[in-house]
Length: 470
Ligand SMILES: Cc1cc2nc3c(=O)[nH]c(=O)nc-3n(C[C@H](O)[C@H](O)[C@H](O)COP(=O)(O)OP(=O)(O)OC[C@H]3O[C@@H](n4cnc5c(N)ncnc54)[C@H](O)[C@@H]3O)c2cc1C
Ligand SMILES: NC(=O)c1ccc[n+]([C@@H]2O[C@H](COP(=O)([O-])OP(=O)(O)OC[C@H]3O[C@@H](n4cnc5c(N)ncnc54)[C@H](O)[C@@H]3O)[C@@H](O)[C@H]2O)c1
Figure (cartoon, rainbow, N blue to C red):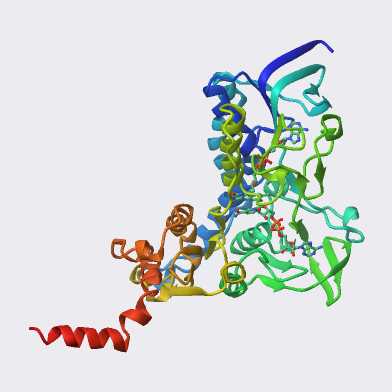
């Protein structure tokens, strides 16, 4: 060992969670070392959120041209240059990269080491030929695609999110294994970019979202030409010439390229967690509400800690760790108001409890819905498909909201605030929403909580009685 570095906080993994801890802790005066074995920015910047949204952006642009005639505009989609789409995606990554770069973090005072980390003791890691001793460690090593055990899969070239965005040519017929957010977003992006797409899921698509709203996303993708096969079991994969053939319990399905998007596996291998007494299982590193592992000097955050796997969750975890590790505050993670969005068109956004979970937890509940077809802005933009669905307890305490429709990811924000602040539905109903905006759907859904009592026989009697007095 050439040298031993001592520091206050050592962060392992420079993705969404790790970078937030490193930047925050360093700017608050801690001595921070960040160890990253791959690209700074992790999955989100390089192989996840950013490239997937950039690819969807390209797909949506093509779709706008196809649908321009609805607005009286005569436009022709002359072609799609897949190499140029690839370059667009990488240009977007390059634009964000400086924010996550080694240079920026070193400028903030963080010591960045670009190697793989491995525990050699409860408070010590080995990185290349160096050892790092830290008062606190934060493990934020993320996750990778889980490869299902399907006969023959290891003998064909398949894509995962790690190499999909390197593709420069058009996949003529993309087979997508898995209908979670990755599968759905990538199926739509490729379809809109002119590829044939078949998506296969062993259960129903988007199983973590409200089935009533998922139905609308499904209908849109199918209308655009994505072939969705649900409750199908893929038993074998083989290559024949340029084709990839899936043998399923419902016959053979043929395509030219295959994307595996069948869930995630946490990155713990190689960390030698046993040496640090950090307990884990295949769902992730076990943490308590303060995000401490079984070794109280070591925290785990983001995807590797299991549960919700989103960039904003990793960022939220980072804040909890900073409060615990730097300020010695017993801050606890609370994911009650954690939203998630699938960025298909239409988008599907959710926060809080869905109908089923709310009924289980609260017994009697109220459900309010408002369709985008009743919203003037949605009509003007010809994006009327979708609805908002809100769940409250019988007294009007907001428990959950889901939106499927245009800009659902933006519209959910107000409901995130409502749930985190334990607001009642009256607050949303009495809010003044600018006209004409999509966000009026939130106010209208909330207002409908009062419709049965407001327009009842009892109200009519009271009004008639009061009117007698002039
Ligand atoms: C295709 C796709 C699209 C997505 N879209 C969205 C989205 O729209 N919105 C959203 O909120 N989330 C999205 N996600 C999820 C999001 O990317 C993750 O939740 C987020 O990146 C998790 O952050 P993290 O810090 O836990 O891990 P990561 O960002 O993955 O970072 C982990 C880092 O640790 C490094 N590492 C691993 N092991 C070691 C080791 N032993 N030593 C040193 N370094 C190590 C890795 O190289 C990596 O850089 C998407 C994911 C994918 C795959
Ligand atoms: N918009 C976003 O925020 C966004 C986008 C992409 C990914 N992510 C994050 O990444 C995570 C992983 O995404 P994902 O879509 O890979 O996983 P997922 O676990 O959400 O969905 C996987 C899907 O694959 C299906 N599946 C599993 N094994 C299968 C098999 N052998 N054959 C056919 N289908 C199979 C499952 O039934 C499920 O529907 C998400 O849960 C989310 O946390 C978020």
